[in-house]
Length: 184
Image 1: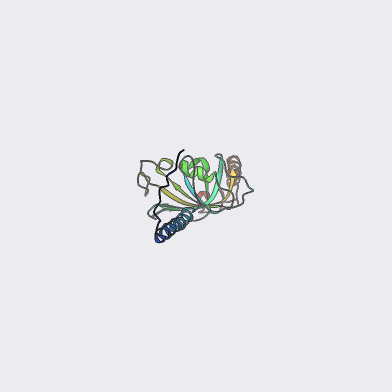
Image 2: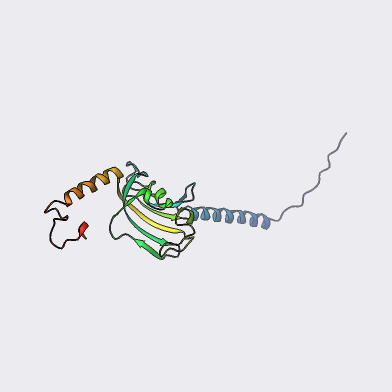
C-alpha cells in the first residue's frame, strides 16, 4: 500500500493577502486610466501619417481624389507651436500639388470636416529646408475641408473666366482703368 504524506503549508498572514488584493486593484485602476489617456483618437496610417478627426463633416459625401482641387482653411505649425503658414480665406489647393502627407490626409476627409495632421519629414519636406520650415521637421496642420471640385471643372471655370475677362465691362483687360490683371 502506498501512503500519501501530507506536507503542511504554513498559513499566510491575512495582511499579506490584503496587500496583494490592494496591489492588484491599484494596477487595474492605473491600467484603465492609462488606456483612457491613450485613446485620444489619433490614427496612424500605414505610411506613417498621423491624424485626428476634430469634426467629422458630411460622411455621406465623397472624399477628394488625387485629381480634385480642395477648398480649405488651414494652419501649419512646427511641433514647437511656431506657425509657418495660415490661410486668410478658403484656399483652393490641388490635392496632388501638395506634400504627400497633406495629400493623403485630404483624401481621408469629407466636406465640412476638420482634421489635425502630423506629417513626418518623409511625407513632408524631408531633409531639405523650405522657407521657415527647417529640414527634417514634423509638420502639424489643422485643416478644414470646405468643398472640392474635380480639376476638369476648375479648368473649365478658369477658361470661362479668362474668355469673359477680355470682354469690355467684365473686369478683364477692357475693365475699369487702373484695374490690375486678375482683380488684385
